[in-house]
Length: 437
Image (cartoon, rainbow, N blue to C red; front, side, top):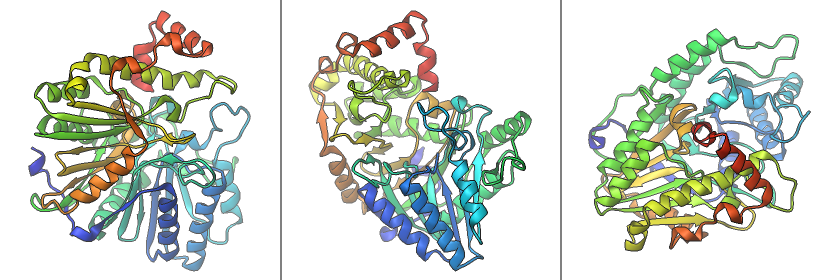
């Protein structure tokens, strides 16, 4: 069915790969400085740190240079109003937004998007930096580690697509579904005049997003890109395409996810793919490359148990599929490089279909967060070698798992981690947690 999925036609040279976080930052700042008509940025957050301030300064400079330019930044409403996890008493990023916009002669719009009434139940996970007729697509948010501002980075995928129609399609969806909603509000107003979205408007907004989609006149042949949107489990086009990619693949799959915890329907499709004698390569972050990992020498926080929980899910999957590992059908690659972290997502099928997405391919992404993705159809094979090069770049810091016993068990974990996980299991809360984490 994927062969008949409509998309926006792309020329062979319309797609470029950026291999590093520093290259993403350079591209982003270059495009902002050269922007002529519009800049729309959607991300989970834009942090109050060096990289975040640099991007905001670039956006304000672009507005100062040309006041008529349409600049809008969309971030998750709840995430923007709280401090970092574990930093009590710290204000949210919205305090920086207020300060900068009140000082600016030509302020820009920074809007908070409340997908649900509480952050734990769903966040804005749309991705894309849409600048004039280009889309810079990455799972990265904007802060020091995602843009490799200092000594550490969080590796992601970075692609630049030159397509006026794709850029227009993605902007139009944002205008129609986000800007026009009373639930989406400015994060730059002072406390006395700020708008707090009520539960009724958030509920209506969520229902609207669950039925929304990108609107475009599609073609069903040739190299093309299909923008996909998804929220909830019932009518989620993005989820359906991911499962169809697995089911319809005839030779091989290449999958990236930072948190290995596939929904049941996806895990079942992967198992059938292996039973049919087809190859799967899964690149997942080692627990020490998880962005929630806390080194044993540092003070432990409960959130630090998450990487270990994901690792146990991976171990169980590998144990069930050890026969496929032995045959070379299943190749699980654990990514680890110094003290850096891993945030790659995406699926490639048969070297001809490639999904760029911010979805973590887990139950939270499957049902709670609003997600998007770009499905690239490479019918002519013109992008095959470039995607192969990207995969080789990813795998250079990954180690293949030869046996499930190579993954540590609970008894090998630090005492605070063991205590948290045992408590979770005793309360039988692990199944619930896997649905929201």
